[in-house]
Amino acid sequence: MLFQADSAFMKEYRDHYFLKAKQEHYPARSVYKLKEIDARFGIFRRGMHVLDLGAAPGSWSLAASERIGTSGYVLACDLQTTETVFPDNVFFRQENVFERSEAFEEELSRLAPFHVVMSDMAPRTTGTRFTDQARSLELCLEAFSVAQKTLMPGGSFIVKIFMGPDIGELLREMRPRFARVTSFKPKSSRAESKETFFVGLGFKSLAGEPGSEAQNA
Picture (cartoon, rainbow, N blue to C red):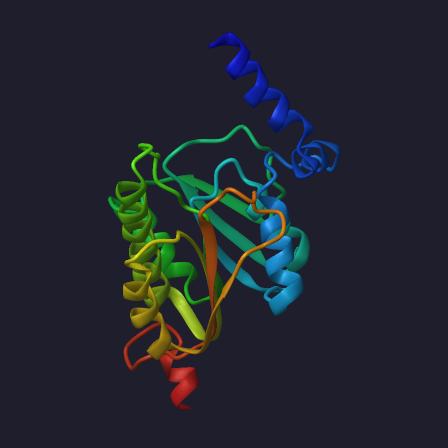
């Protein structure tokens, strides 16, 4: 067992993106997935307001903050805390997305609408594929529920999902609300990983949602 653990550690240590993240002072290799998504779809611009769900340890928030600059901001939350030191334009909150505190809901209402809502949330894996996929879908649907309430018209939604037979449920929810919905598998995702990302572009706000007045003006 010790040999297996050591082998797993060495595989991680030798990983190109793991080493690159350490060299560039990001807390996790996942930062390069978001950078690839941004390079492909042109998500971020200066001055944007971003909501980051499942933000710990903070790599996505850091990458977004670099792209939006000091005139924008990132509201980040995660069930876990993080020791990452964020720049002044990132505000981290320890929150359970399924049991959001009243204070956090008030903060969401005050800061919405957002240009981008993004979720790198993943379930605590069990090793049972269908269970993990079902839990991943549950997280994605909750992230999309938050996005529908907080995105501005024309905004973007990025969400990670474990591929499985039920992904059509998320796509059926997303497609009517965006001008374009597509999947994207970054090169920085491990080859054996079942994860992919759905990207929604051009959010269509409904009457009564944040920013709907601007769309209907």
